[in-house]
Image (cartoon, rainbow, N blue to C red; front, side, top):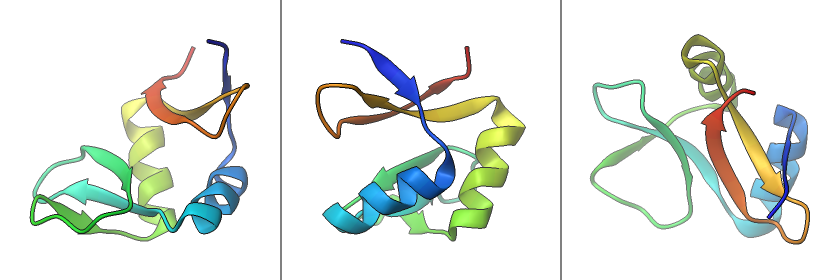
Length: 75
């Protein structure tokens, strides 16, 4: 599976299509993009999501064959 790094506006577009939201585990800098509510995650804004990604050297990647998203270390 080939994964391509995405820019935040592209991530926001896909997130909007699928009803996804940026979030983090309360009290940590662990971020995710979620659909279903969870007591484990706190919703955050896209600016905070992007700031945490940069701080931790992470980026959002998308599979070329689908809309599968994954947060990984930048290459």
